[in-house]
Image (cartoon, rainbow, N blue to C red; front, side):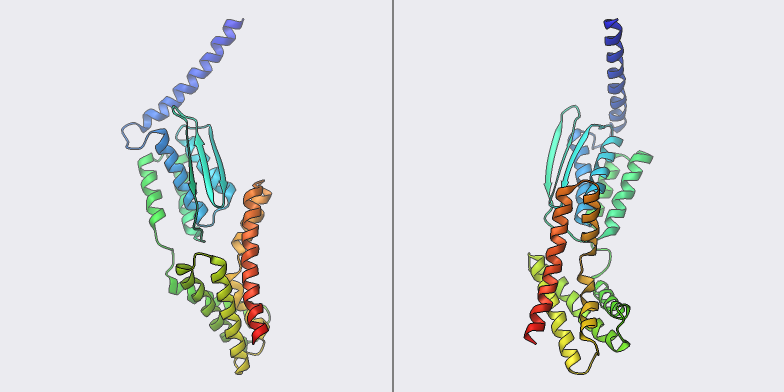
Length: 279
């Protein structure tokens, strides 16, 4: 009886190994087929998503699905807003850590990586093709030019002013103040490594512009103009991702993203408060 159980267990193990060998053999003839190369593909996909606004649970799920599609069912991931630790158990178990130092919001790249992941899992995309597409996505410039982002933020500021029950006389002052504030954020982010300082100065510029315009008879409600103008700076995506990560059980990521959103809101409020106390 023990011999039969042993033979049955060995048979299951042999079948599992044969399945993995079949997958690995399908990768043969390509330039990317080792454990470390599959690890590189998974980490690059996770890095792109995390840098461009993807939530932690989505990043981990995507990396593990890609690894499983290439025959590495036993993979492990640990993702925080500032780093990714990923490991796979293959013929030579491998673990790598990458640091995320810059983060922005570009959901188009997140969508592209999601599409690549689905094609890997469904259509059997080769590792060479997957790596090439991911590298191309990683090097793509921002989806929209800076002038268009600034113009859109300015227009959105005016629309927010109307939405908060401001008059049409407050529309153009909000457009001007919001455009100046977002322009400063874009410019200062190039030279100032601390993003909260850039947001503080942008909020101060918005407050100063709104006060000067209303004092000269352009605009009726100072509060509405300021509220509408700072809305493009509000960290809405960070707050949403923080809540989603907390609900998914990623406590470290959820709390850190929530703290980052709080600091951004604090910088915006401080910039406005300083200007209103001085003018």
